[in-house]
Length: 205
Image 1 (tube, helix red, strand yellow):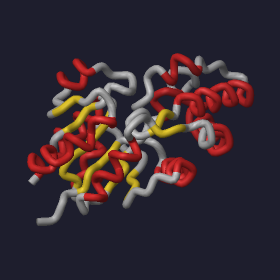
Image 2 (cartoon, helix red, strand yellow):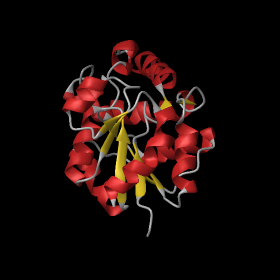
Image 3 (cartoon, one colour):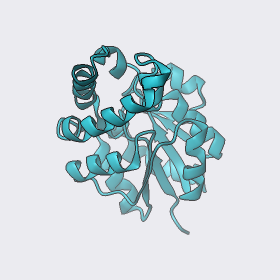
């Protein structure tokens, strides 16, 4: 029987991107002259970039701010990013069981791919620029039987796709919030994922 693919969110699920994102927001402030509170921004990672930047930039300046941020991101955010505990082992565990690993993220796909190359994390596909229910299409298209994320919107994505959602409270959302959002299972972090994987795949079949 074919092992289903497993989908993972990226920011604060597989990788701690906070330092690089904060640095990018500080550079954006310097370049544009518009203040962005980098600590407030990294405390609510998950939603698309435009959602965060709309807190700081007027509508007429929003698209230019998005473009500027993404150019700065490539310079300032890739190197400081580190894998979260258990992330590499979680990906390896899926591959060892013959499954595929798909990163489904609100980040642009090309930026997620830059991170993955820098981190040396081998995944089978990346689907970017998706959030909440929007992630469900990619989860389904890639045959993911499980979706793992740190945000309540990731649990919405899993529920919309009709697959078990696995929560990790390593981002802005608590274990209780993830459970309320519909997580089938909440782990302390990805170090618990390998042991839970066989049972999750049984749910997915």
